[in-house]
Image (tube, rainbow, N blue to C red; front, side):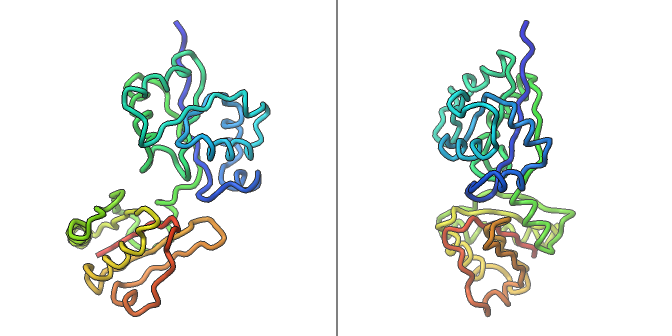
Length: 241
């Protein structure tokens, strides 16, 4: 009976890969060495992933790699097929579009299936926008919760903001959430409209990139400030009531 391979969760840079030095900066040497020996990958988008793999300086031609996609359009029925390299004894790398796979990422479904099959899952060290934002926010790092995306509809979003703020105040818990970049400005405006003036809000945009922006203010002070430019910039929002 063939011993299953291991599923390696490979973080990637939080911005567009522009060279091997970016990859080396994002991944510690042991994680990079592991990624370089793999020949089977499941990725969110093949084009982006191949760019990362190219800059990882793998010792084999890119065209010899087996690269399969897993994203929001992948039918649940296709997940089992993605496990086949593992079941055949090959190690498999899982990569997100940015940052850590399986966190706010479709890859979580493959990890869940691997766990259910008793396959070894190995998370590798690399950049996490959520933890980097929390580290730099000055908000409570002992108690925090990640909520993914808030509702897009204005009334539902307003209700979610009030509920998260109330929970944050009662539990002294930092609330972390994200938004599709082109809706960042709408979420920022909603936070200023519906959150309490004393609530603290951190905006963390373009983390680890040259134009990184991380700033924490009270809602009162954000209302007085010039609105930050968040359009199409990956941003993490952190709130503490």
